[in-house]
Length: 298
Image (cartoon, rainbow, N blue to C red; front, side):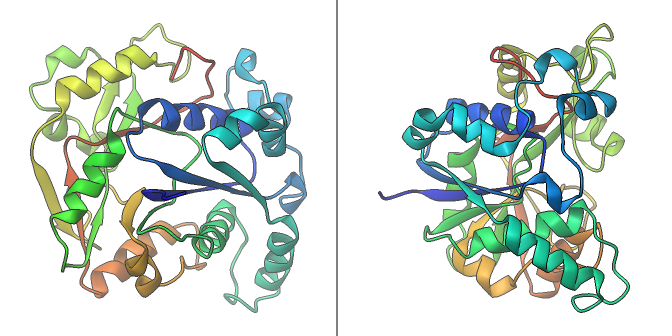
C-alpha cells in the first residue's frame, strides 16, 4: 500500500475522544493515511479510565461508549482495517520506561506525567513510519477540517530544500459570542488561547458541543489562500502542535524530550535552534475540542 502520510496518535486513555477523531480523519481527509494508534493499558497510570471517571473530569455522560482503547478496535475491527488504522499496544515498554524515568535514569528529578507518556509513544510510533511525511502529536481530541491534510502537504512541497514544518490553523472552541462580530478571527481572537483562533460557542451548549456542519461552515468562512511563516521557537503568532513534516526531518530533529510537561515547547525550541521554520496555510484547520461526541456531533 502506497500511503501519502502516517499519523501517530499517542493514547493512554480517552477512548471516546479517539473514536471521534478517527471518524473525523476518515470523513475530512483527502490523502491516504496510515494511522498508528500507539497506546498503553490503564495500569501504566495506575488507574482505569472508566465511564464514571470520565464524567468526573467534565465529559458528558451520554457520550461514554468505550471504557478502553482496545475496545475501540474490538468493536470496529473491520472498519479500522478498511481505513488502515493500526493499534499498537506498548504497555510493557511504557511500564519499563516509566520505572527508569522515576528512578532518575532518564531525566534526574523528573516527575512522570501525561507529557512524558505522550512523548514516549510518539517516539516509538516514529520508528514504525515508512512514508515520506509524518504527522506528530495528533491528540485524540483533535478534529480536522475538510482537506486539512492536502493543504499541509502542498505547502511543504513548495519548500523542497528548506527546513520547514507545516501546521494547520489550530482552533479552540469557547463561549465567546457570535462569530459574526469578528472581521478577522486570526487577529481578533488568537490572543485568547495561545495563538489559537476561537470557534464561538452558543452559551446554551453543553461543554464544548459542536456539530460537524457548523465546523465545516466555520472553516469555509475563514479559509484564506495565504501562508503564515514563523521561526520555530518563536511563538508570537502560530501554535506549535500538531506538526506535519518530512520523515527524514523528524529523524534529523530527534526524539521528543522528557524534561517535563512542556515537551512540545522544548521540541519547538529545539527545531528553532536547528534552523527550522513553521508554516501555516490558512486553508488547513483543526479544532482542539473539549469533549467526546456521538456520530453527528464533532
